[in-house]
Structures are given as C-alpha cells and as structure tokens.
Amino acid sequence: MVRDLSLFQDAVYRVPVRAFPWRERIDPWGILVSEFMLQQTQTERVIPYWERWMRRWPTPEALNRASLEEALREWSGLGYNRRCRYVKDCAGIIAEEYAGVLPETPEDLRRLPGVGSYTAGAVACFAYNYPAVFIETNIRSAVIDFFFSDRSAVKDAEIFPILEAALEENRQNPRKWYWALMDYGALVKKTAGNPNRKSAGYTKQSRFEGSFRQRRGAVIRSLAFQGPATAEELADRTGMSPEALLKTLQALEKESLIAAKEGIYKIADR
Image (cartoon, rainbow, N blue to C red; front, side, top):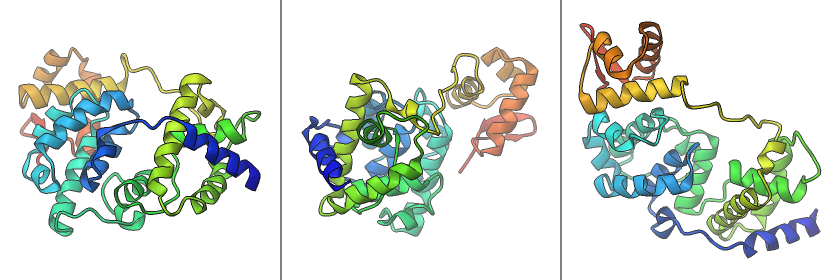
C-alpha cells in the first residue's frame, strides 16, 4: 500500500494543473459559490456564471441585499435552481450570524443550508487549506482508475482509507493535493473512459428533455423573467398540462422557491 500510494501521488502530481478563476483568487465566499455551481454541472459551463455572479455579488452581504428573484435570473441556465436558493440562504446566515466571514471547519460549514459532507470538506480545504477528507466524481475516478481498475462495484468505503492515507502525506498543503487529485481524475475521465461506472453507487443521469427538472426550470424562468402569474397563465407560458403544472408548483412551493397568494404565484421572498 505504501509503495502504491507513493506511485499514486507521483502520477497525480504529474498531471497538468487546470486554471479556474476560483483557484486564482482564494476567496472563501467565491469558493462556496463555485462549489454550489459545480454540483452536477460541467466546469467550463460554470466559469462565466461564476465570474458574473462574483462581479455582481462579491460578498455574502451583497447577495443578502438582493432578492431571490434577482439571484434566480442570474442563475438561469445552470439548472437545479434549489442550489441558488441554498446560496442565497447561506449568504443571509453568513452575513447576519458570522459577520460576513465564512466558517472555517467542515463541522461549522455543515450548519449552512444545502451544505453536505463533500461541500463542507471541499470549501474548508480550498478556502482555508483545512485537511479534510472528502470525495466527489473526479476524486472517485482518480482512485478507482489507479487502485481498482480491474474491479466493479467499488464502494466509497473502500476509497476513503486511501484518501485518508494520501492526505497524511500531503497535510502541509491539502489544497494543492486535492486540486491535483481532481485534475488527475478529470484527465482520466477524458482519456480512459469514466471510472465512476465501476463505482457501487453509479447511476446514469436521467434525460433532461421532458423531465420534471425541465418543468421546474420552466416555471422558475417564467416567474423570474415574466413576473407573477396565475396557474392558468403559467400553463399558457410553459405549455404544461394542468396536472403536470400542479405537481411542479407544489414541489417548488415545498422547497420555498415560489409562493402563492390569492391564486397568484411568484418567486418566494426570503
């Protein structure tokens, strides 16, 4: 294992380093925003959104002063609008309870809305060089490709001990190690297929066209760009059947993305 780990680290550090704006400027708020945007979204697609977002709302306080409707208009096109709600809610908590300063540890970051184990570890590491152990698709690809290339149904429980051992060797600069590890995994996915298919938890993303995700996005875009509307007006705008629209509206209300008053739907207030 020790020899394999040394060879693994050598292979990881030989990979060319990718350049992203959230790497060039180490800003905890910008890193949190990037991690939400990068969830289930390709990196190259995220870059222009992140740059526009950070110009408009460079601090949690700035976003806290904006409305959710403004934020959703800026987010439009990235999909998974619930992430935008989480970023907006995080901004309010950071601005009002943490004096605008992002928490430093994974434990404290986990208290923020929508922040799970991976995001908490990644933000702590990239923002503060905190030695956290975490896993995502590129990290998983890197480990599976090097250590489990002849296996299938590889469990994350098998991967974490390797990550823990590798982190012990890179505790002086975990940020640099994880960036290199992600870059290695991204390269492997491009050149040798997707090792994540060998993961026990691998599932293929469902088709977007005609999906519930597409319907949700259509309602959010309509309300964010065209303003409040009745269910009948939304049906006309989106082309949805009354049954499909009702289910979509109920889901969006439950997630506090939209609100209804006297039959008029709008983007929810904070």
